[in-house]
Amino acid sequence: MQTPVQKNQELTVTIADLTYEGMGVAKIDGYPLFIEDALPGEEVRIHVLKVQKQYGFAKMVTLLKASPERVAPVDAALTQTGIAPLQHLAYSAQLKFKQRQIELLYHKAHLDDIPVLPTLGMADPTHYRNKAQIPVREINGVLETGFYKRRSHELVPLTDFYIQDPLIDQAVVVVRDLLRKYGVSGYDEARDHGLVRHIMVRRARATGEMMVVLITRNWAVPHLDEIVAGIQAALPQVVSVMQDLNAKRTNVIMGNEVKLLAGRDHIEDELLGHRFRISALSFYQVNPQQTAVLYQTAIDAAALTGDEVVIDAYSGIGTISIALAEHARRVEGVEIVPAAVADARLNASLNGLTNVQFTVGKAEEVMQTWQAQGMKADVLMVDPPRKGLAPEFLAAVGQLLPPKMVYISCNPATLARDLVELRSFGYTAHSTQPVDMFPQTTHIESVTVLTLGDQATE
Image (cartoon, rainbow, N blue to C red):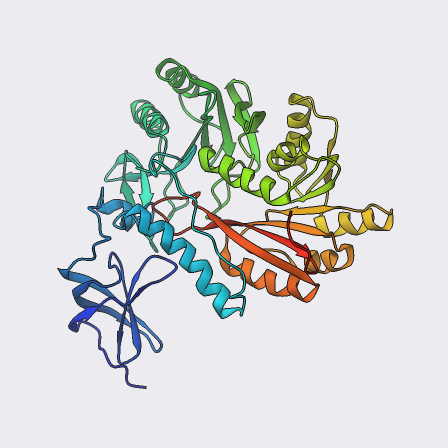
């Protein structure tokens, strides 16, 4: 089949739309071309890079007419690496883009009757990340830290990541310079050689406590004591220095074995008035300001009176469960990762809570056991990974049929899919509230409240 464009052709086009990945779309006789850094309504001169049967890719050569929503990018490397792919789009337009992405997916799934509310954004949509996992590589014999170009394994050296806490950026540079000083090698992916793969830094926004984790290919690191002492001397807010072993030839960043090098094995943070212990392997939301907004939105959506039994599936280290506990009679958290459940139990104890408990296991199996034991849940809170709710979990919901569900989603495509299935069980979704957890990126989080039958939310 002949495509209407050929590789290396130069064309003048008008950008019609923006994909969910933030790329501009131009159509030539119905054939879509995807163009990085282009915005709807812009007229651009493009060079065709790649032509496939259904679509192609092009790069912008000249911007002939700019969108009124275009803003000056901070650093081209932030787009190249995918750290901030929407940095050239005004923040108000980013919020509308995220709302529109959910609306389009709902339209495709015939869910147009579910209103999508305006996205809740940040006053300052920069420097919000409380966690960094930064690759360490050698370029021309010099150990560097930075980020990979999109769809490649080519490291772009960076010291200002724009969307990260500046104190984290500073800490990464301190650790990098210590590794350079003591001649420690960076990881060579192609040869599976070298020592330090990544530097991970976490900083608790409320307490200021910081953790540094060296992710290495084996345990033996030359001059490790001097490096740890150097970290502590340069960064007094570091209360935890850890080492993580990842000996596998893999794209997975962290291994499951960790060792304490100095201080304690966790940091503590505060969220919605509660205190949380966060260890090296803990999952903890990376935007603390918007996490408070997201969880408060979910709590408000649940409209608890204080007399309900709430199941929190995918409960992790207990952040949502603990935030819910003061509003409910009892909260039952379920989580498949034993270490996360151990953290959750510690966190419940740390906050003096006696009406929340955590069970290790697959949520669908644990929920079916509870149902067999006669337990009735008033509200089911779900916060699944990007793949959404597993078919087995949905089947368990269809048996348990809690009167109300609150669905926190990090992927609107799987959310729309799951809402169609939940509708078949008799659930009505009343509205979806997007919350911008990841400004300057295309990621979208949201909260959707559902009730069984047509009963309205309170």
